[in-house]
Amino acid sequence: MVAVLLAGCPAEQEFAALPPLTEDGQPMQAVPADPKMLNADGDRYFLVVRLRMATIEVPLGTASGTEEIWSYLDEEPVGAMRSAALTRNGLRIGVGRGDSWSDLAAVLKRMTGRKLRESHMLAAPGNPVPIVLKRRQGIQTIFTFHSDRTLSGADYPPGDNLLTVSCTLDQDDPSVITITGVPQVRSTQRKQKIVQQSTGFLMVAKPTLFRFRPLAFQIAVPSGDFIVVGPGSESYRPHSVGHHFVVREKEGMEFETVLVLMPEVFAAPLKK
Image 1 (cartoon, rainbow, N blue to C red):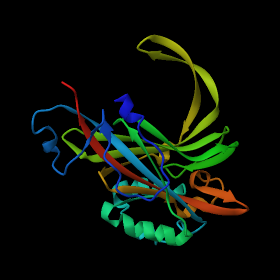
Image 2: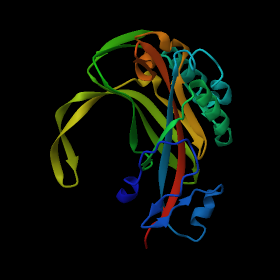
Image 3: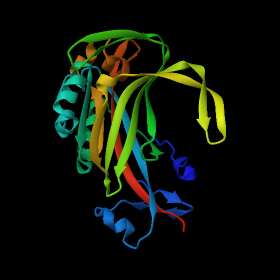
Image 4: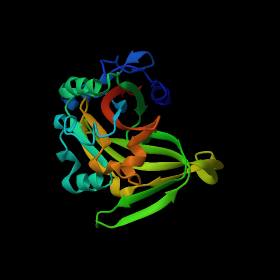
């Protein structure tokens, strides 16, 4: 299992058909439309999620100020209350069907004239996966809107701005992935902490994580469909969460980052 999880590697290409995952040189089986076929012969298996990601930067207002991108996406799975909380904090999330990806990719490329940057990683179901949106940020002052419509602000230490996601599966229907995500600031400075492992207690240096709980979300996505995370209309506010996580400055100009997540589920039989 560890060998499989370390097999992911980044690539600079658009979403295209990738070869199946392998385990001990044998291709793993993509989860079929009928999940019962996985153990039709009574074999036991383990599941792994390949999380494919694509990012593209567009000029400020291209994604947050128009509906062209979002017209290809369904925002209802996010939930009305959660979608409103994300919007107030400068973020927006939608779900797209796998067969509509080529149309959306064409729109994104037309906006910038550049290809999307793709990478992929493997994750065991339930394990958190940090996705770095902005690296090596200085001290940040960020204000967060809460569900009760109150506003709070805080100063965060230098570090990386992450979107940490976890993919969980239903063993009875592993073709649908539940993606839980939350924005986080991961401090550059590390502190010594005591961690319990199978061999005993160890002292390790770990960063401090600051979570933005009002922006946490959970969406069920069929394998092969995708999630888009991008700037909302309030991302123009310099102290909003969206501005700090998906807006960056280059040569005096501001650009918005659009992140696409496409999860795929594979199964490998356990050795008897």
